Image 1 (cartoon, rainbow, N blue to C red):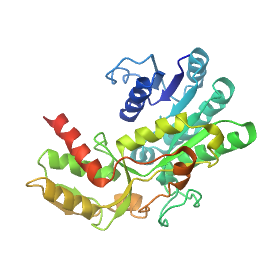
Image 2 (cartoon, one colour; image 1 turned 60 degrees about the vertical axis):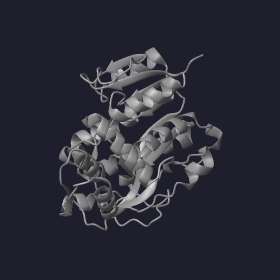
Image 3 (cartoon, rainbow, N blue to C red; image 1 turned 60 degrees about the horizontal axis):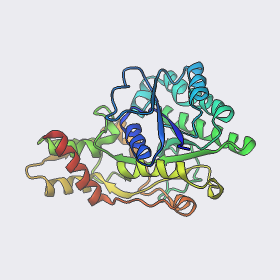
Length: 313
């Protein structure tokens, strides 16, 4: 029987890519997202449910109707929006996520994959960053993610709930929102393709763990399908490669004729990423569900330039 997988935030860029990958493998995908997003995907889903993730009655109805074999929970306010509206961030990222997990424990006890972040750890981090490093975030976004991780771990330990968590580093992606200041590596590539100069909002030596978008998608799909008997780690860190702002600038200057850039550190952006690790230890993911990144920086950069150029043509 073909499995059904529910993806919250399923009409967003990441959700659509995950859905397409799953459908290619034979799964039925039910996408849950905000009204107005239902026409965003390029291929018809098995079902699209529109509504607010905070609507517990709609969540229950969705699970009762479709009885998904797995849930991939991507719906979330991003870091900048969370800081602008902490109350909504807590309601959407934390409370609604816990409600969904409680409903899933009752109605859809298969794998529940939660998208978390390096932001759960806070500043001044060691490198490589171990999965069990203390998590003391200084942003509301990070705090909401930690809250869900802890509740998921509790439900797993006490009730046998199949909670699975991925913590992502900075992601190199053609879909980085313009307002996402911490996505400056992706923004620099877009500027280069569009023939614009770019100002890096960090110091040249500022570096952080990175992962290419395709490896993010593959990580989500692979963990969803992983053998649960092998999974013992509460949450998994993923890491592709280490990258500094200066290295991005040097690559684009050499690769894209006429590209120019400068550096004007923004205290807000530096505060978000300046204390991030150069490497996140992904050893548990490698040993427990055989995860490996397919992209290093050069292959990520070439793939990103190709996709942005196609979009810009």
